[in-house]
Image 1: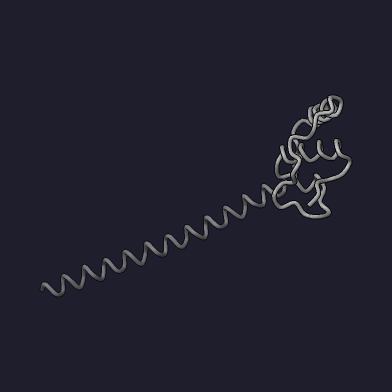
Image 2: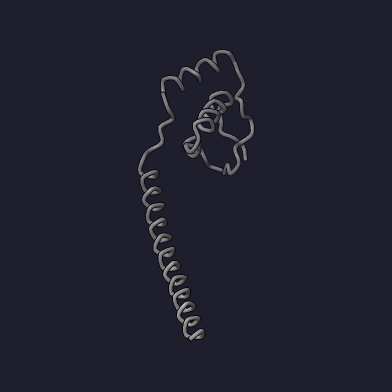
Length: 110
């Protein structure tokens, strides 16, 4: 009787663990599908550097005051042939690149 009970308990425990693994696998697939949808939503939206008039006013004032750009070194990952449009992932990198370009007349060196 003891062995039969122990066998039933071990079988039930094995079944419970197996079902938990199946549920977790389904959750993982759901999470991957959600992440893909979020990535798609983000990539569909174009970058907007905020208020373009405020950015232009900032750049004009900086050039008028002969203020050097706050960033004189290219950001990490800068590659030959890039322009400020390649930095649209960050407003500050984009703004600093435009300031650098207007101040020096060329893009960052690499």
